[in-house]
Length: 268
Ligand code: ZN
Ligand code: FE
Image (cartoon, rainbow, N blue to C red; front, top):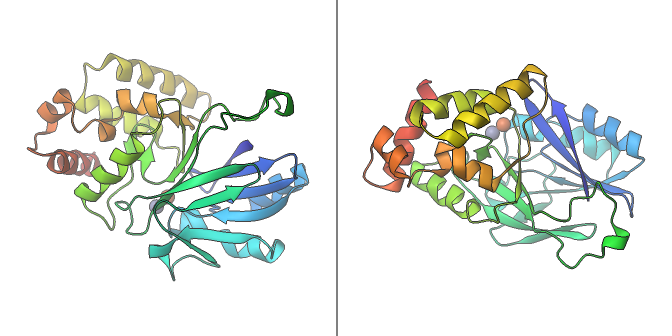
C-alpha cells in the first residue's frame, strides 16, 4: 500500500492509499475532490473507498464530487456520525475492521474532538513476502489515520467532547507500537511545538524537534507523518501523566491535567 499525502485547503492533508497490484485507491478525509481526482488520474487508479474520520467540512468536503466520479466507491465513517457524513454507507463501531487491498484496518472510536470521531489503524503486514513488495510500500510499520485527534505536537480542540474522553481516546492510541506512523489531517506542527515548549522548556527531545521542524517549515516541507514514539517524547497531549507536565499545568487527575493543558493551548 502506497500512501500519498495531498495538501488541501489552507493546512489540511488528504491521504490517498494506493494498491498498485489491483490499481485501486482509497482516500482518507477528502477535504476537497480536486487533488484526489488529479492523483487518481496520475496513477490510473479507481477509487473504491472513502474513509472519513469525522463530519467536519474540511474532512468530508470532497465526498459528493468523488462519489459522482466514482459511484461504486464505498463511504465509511463512524456510526455516531450517522446523518452528518455525505454519502455514508458503512457505519463503523469500535473494533470493526475494514479492508483495502491486502490491508485490513482496525477502527478505534475516539470521541473528544467530536462525538463521532474514529481512527483507522492498519497494522504492519508482518508475514508479507518481500519479493512481492516495492521499496515505496509501507508494510513495515503500522499506519494510523487519526483525523483531528492527535496532531504532530498537539491535539484537536474539544468541540464536542470532554477532557476525560480525549484522555481515554489518546490513551488507547498511545498504546500502539512506537514505530506506528501518525497521519494527522493538518499541518499544525510548528505552532503546536512552540506551545509545547512553554509547558516543557527543559525537554531536550522537544527542543531538538522544534529546531528540526522550524527548518523543515522554512523549506515548506511537510512534517506529517509523525510516529507514536516521537509524540510520546515531545507532545504534551500524550504526556498528561509525566511529572514535568503535571508540575507545569497542575491537575490532580489525568483528565484535569489534560483539561488545563488544552485550556492553555486554546488561549495560546
Ligand atoms: Zn475537525
Ligand atoms: Fe480538521
